[in-house]
Image (tube, rainbow, N blue to C red; front, side, top):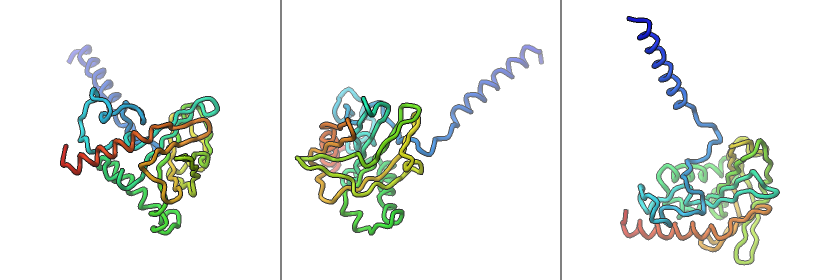
Length: 223
């Protein structure tokens, strides 16, 4: 075998090893759920006919069950995603998302010493705080709900991520917590989420419309 051929084989093996190493990078503990190219509250396949409809129109993605608040001014560098844990809504989620969110809800009583019936009466939400700066702080209890002239404050904020209680997120780091609000908040009402100078505006109504359309299609047996 010539010297030139040996060198060529060594170079090819080296490139293949590098490619394999990059593909096998494990996910971090605080990795976000799979993100589509569309942000929560923006057009999705349900709203935009030009977006590819590769999955069932009666199955909802994570983003279609969430609203997003993006930091500005005093909250620059902070992103907040609020995902509904309403039973009727997550029943329409893709199977892996449904399994994950249902598991989170079922763990609440045992993990936080609540009675199951008390948890069932309250209004649960999954909230994610993501950092886009080297380090940014957040105050969990500042997230509130406004609806039809009423203001709702979280009764309980339950950490899901181990680092949630630090109240700090680093660059591209995400931590999760489950929020329990008082019973009786109407999922189908015009809910507005506020945190400091951030507001979800009318984004929640988009979730309501997606859930209603997906439920109607599933009941009609449409794909």
